[in-house]
Image 1 (cartoon, rainbow, N blue to C red):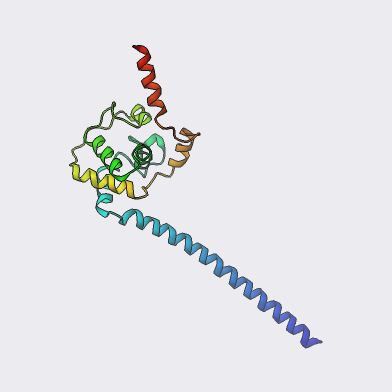
Image 2 (cartoon, rainbow, N blue to C red):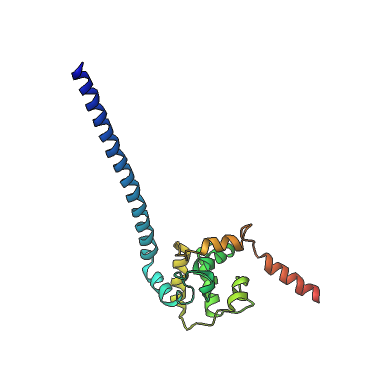
Amino acid sequence: MNNVEITKVQKMKVLKIFLVITLVIVTSCSNNKKTKNNITESLEISTENGEGYKLLQQHCYACHSVTSKSHDEIIAPPMVAVKRRYIRSYNTENEFVEAITNWVLDPSEENALMFGAVQNFKVMPKQPFNKEEIIKIATYMFNNELEKPSWFQKHFNEEHPNGMRKGKRREDACLKIIKLF
């Protein structure tokens, strides 16, 4: 009887050790997976179309910051917001790249798609970039997930509780102008 009890106790100890080891392995594997995904996402952001990404960092992020701590600290909308708005109106790569390129080469209130941004920040100043660089930046923007400030999604959801409308504000503004005449 004593040998049987020892065997049961030994089995329980082995079972407990096995469960602890299994728990440690499962926990560490899931943490590694998260770390790996974060590293992979960073690499995807920084390696696809490397030249476009470098130009985006050099020319755009000075104003369209991804490191700001709040919406109150920015002087221009984040590039992820620009992409979201432009891709709604220009959903093919060629249309998107052409629209971004045309805007950067000749920004004006009349050609603006982002009316809230124009109201908050005014029209983007004309930049001394060459067309080839803008095309590379716009191509990168279209084909890659863009970095976004930590506050962006919360702000976006607050500003667009019902999702983004398709040019509704512009249509309303046009109707008001037409009614004046």
